[in-house]
Amino acid sequence: MSAPARTSAVRAVPASPIAGTRHRPLPIPSVRLVGGPLAAWQQRNGEATIPHCIEQLDVSGVLDNFRRLLGESDAEFRGLVFADSDLYKVIEAVAWEIARTRTRAFDSWLDDVIALVARVQEPSGYVDTWIQGVAPEKKFAALEWTHEMYVAGHLIQAAVALVRAAGRTDLLDVARRLADLLVERFGPGGEDGICGHPEIETALVELYRLTGERTYLDLASRMIDLRGHGLLPAGSLGAHYFQDHRPVRESTAAVGHAVRQLYLNAGVTDVFVETGDDSLLRAMDAQWNSAHDRKMYLSGAFGSRHRDEAFGDDYELPSERAYAETCATVADLLWTWRMLLADGGAGTARYAETIEREVHNALAAAVDATGTRFFYANPLQQRRDHHSEENAPRERAPWYVCACCPPNIARTVAQLSAYVATVTDGALWLHQLADAEIDLPAELGTGTVRTVTGYPADGRVEIRVEGDVVPGAELSVRIPGWSPRSTLVGPDGPRECDGDGYARAPLEPGARYVLDLDLTPRLTTAHHRVDALRGAVAVERGPVVYCVEQADLDAPLDVDDLAVLPPAPITVGERDTLVLRCRVINAADGLYGPDTATEFGDEHTVTAIPFSTWGNRAPGPMRVWLPRAPR
Image 1 (cartoon, helix red, strand yellow):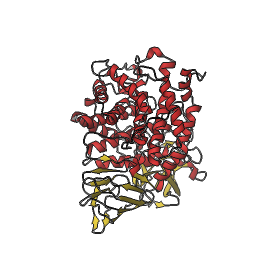
Image 2 (cartoon, rainbow, N blue to C red):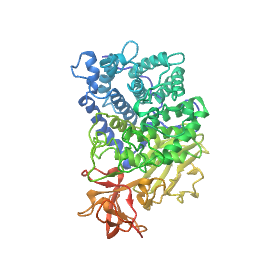
Image 3 (spheres, rainbow, N blue to C red):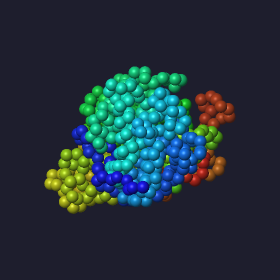
Image 4 (cartoon, helix red, strand yellow):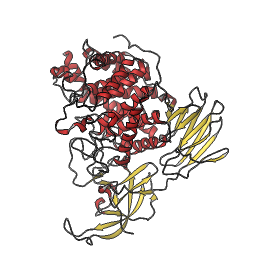
């Protein structure tokens, strides 16, 4: 087989706007996570998670689904109708790992699987193994359920990532033939059709950004314009499930299947950036406020209903029944980053802080310490008699029948450095506080900004500017909202946080700045309308949410019988743990009783651990939110 075609690698970024945005992303190779938990996570992702995902593509039958169409496997089709997307997300993960490390370890695997996809592709450009091998009569005939465009979107995104990361164009050739087919069939003047699972929209925009071919952007815009006009049969779950209940510009609340809503919003934001249609941005502002001010879990997770993997009503946030799908957190991270690039104003800090919450909590909790076992659903409470469901097991699993989450984690972790910093005219912005080396873009000089920190376990962040810098350049550093009195201290004294959540200082060669954040543990309460959390508190330290796990309690203590004693001080223990003072709840017998029946017994000190680390020792009860004991 001849070597794959390559071109000079373009900017290795997940989102690369053509139209002007105030914030411009930096290429993954220019931002290197060199220490701390995020760097360790990326290393584990490259060494364990991605190889594990590659192995599971064979074990689960994803690759055999392609081979059987060529007569190279006699296996029956396995997996769900969108199983092909597992392969494409793993390819994307490999692409960003190549961008991060310049590894060649996956080259032969890429050669094999890309050639496999190309051989299965029909002359028309169509490729989808479930349709081709199981139900050819459903080709583009049942868009509400077949996921054809969703799968195509992940193929396109993988192809774009390979070009940006490695200059490799063989998968792009496949992706463009498929995208051209979609343009021909569903573009202006063609059929009215939208996918039941949004995702294709943002993929088409990125393909436009890579190739400059306007028809891809036009198709993404058309699909957004067609949504909300009843094109998809609603079925028993209703039009809200598909985000087809109302036109996008009129839909101001996050509803329905959480992953679908959040992927759609990422695509809508991309289309706004490239077209300048302010009506789309107004809708996205309202959607963002709906999802994050009234429907987001403390951990940065989304989706409170198991039945349809959906958002609930405003303030409907049960802990033990939280679905909180891992893919929803990934989708929101992608959308929120695009909102940061698109907005660039006073909302920048809230977008960056949301990404920080998601990365350090919900996303980190979704994978175990080995990098090879995963949660699909991420509840904030697990009871002793927890009943496992297929996608909500009692403990992490190595794979799932619906395996969307593991490869989604792999591709997201591989690209984490892309979300650390941006550049605006004359300024470098630090959005995420991590131990990193950042190469300045040419417009700011040829130097490097080095951030040295043990964050989030340590609140001290030292920033050093090395090399040549353009005169007058500026450094903007986010000051987290939970540490509002912190200042950025440099050669000319302290610099306080501006109204937009960032402290500013000259970006000068040899300059050294220090940021000391207040990591005093704190108790958090929920809005009074969150009925499931009335009278309860959670513990946070910096951006990290904590929980109490049964594994840390000696018999006969039970995590469900503990109440936190405020305002007793919370102390920091070993290995990032916290020590809480709690009292045991001694309730009267019976399910219900008089208001005076509850009594509080002995006081105990209890260990709390980062929520991201729970379930790594043994399955068992866990709680993020604990009742508040009377003072």
